[in-house]
Amino acid sequence: MKNDPASTLSQVISSMVLQYAGGIHVGFPCRVISFNESTCRADLQPLIKSSDTNPAMIQNVPALGHRYKINGSESVCTPFLKVGDTVFVVCADNEIKNALTGSVASADTSRTHDVNDAVIVGVLPCSL
Image 1 (cartoon, helix red, strand yellow):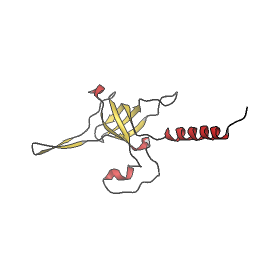
Image 2: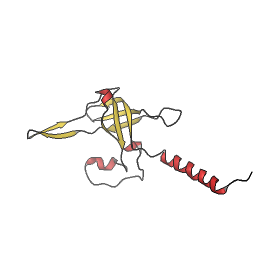
Image 3: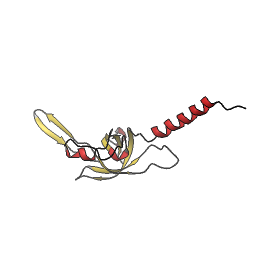
């Protein structure tokens, strides 16, 4: 039986696209393993498997706070997470480490959608 070169090339390209896309992270649920209230950072266990092994923990992930104006008065809400909470995490388009100071900054790396640039955006309803 003759091999079809177009079919073989298509299979190779499809495999490469799937492998590359597997390294892109956008948003996913995690369990809180520990939370440092003074730094608003947590160690997390991702809850979605993409292979036979459990995903690696993500350490030192910042949690978003919120600032509201209620009846003309400013109110700041800082995160409070409990061990075991299920949170939703998003990964920034680029490295965020240098921008976390609040200043415009260049990234030190070219990484994109990486778990090292994850941010906790909130607690999922199953933990409230």
